[in-house]
Image 1 (cartoon, rainbow over the protein chains, first blue to last red):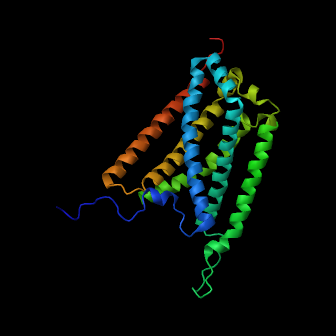
Image 2: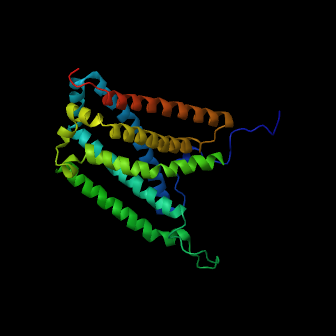
Image 3: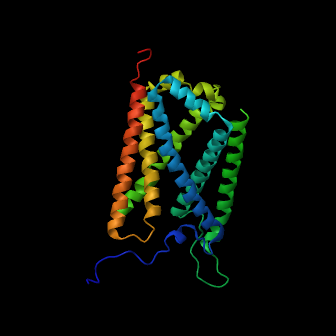
Length: 146
Length: 122
């Protein structure tokens, strides 16, 4: 057997690695939320494209579908979708800011008590998540009480 | 280098998604707030056809479709490829995701084109 032949990578956590948050606390849970909301959004996008193709069946079929979407359960789904989009976008903005190296502070000597860049970055995380929460609430008010 | 390019493109499409998805939300879901039009009216068949006959809308929707699908499919690929896959399986995931993305893109483009070329009363 050729031992140089590449096989499955054995240094990954597999499915556990998708949800296990380790000791990274808040930011790691945001990461899980980012993934779940992203998966929800892409699943919706695909369904949305298939659903809009329904217009090719004519006006009656389209109006029937729109009447279904105006029902309360779909209003709630629509709102959840909006909330997912806002969360995903706002957390994405935070990730890009981090990626570009802003709000991480200057590198320091690793002298006890340690100061991590995650902690220096955390106030921005709270501000962005606060904004996301506000947009989600405001968006809901105009969606449910137009 | 190839992975860096793919990753960069997934970030570069973000402004397109932000602007066009924002506009889509405003037109379809927040019509009462932005256009003083009820959501029901905004989603009516005749309104939708009228909007869809604009060349600007045709181009922008296809752009949003491409940008959104690329960003989403790249994300799904990243999540799946975190699993302990063999290189062959990883390649299969890539091919599957590209094929699925292209199929959905083709369907969305066709629907947008159908709306653009729809003959009212015909």
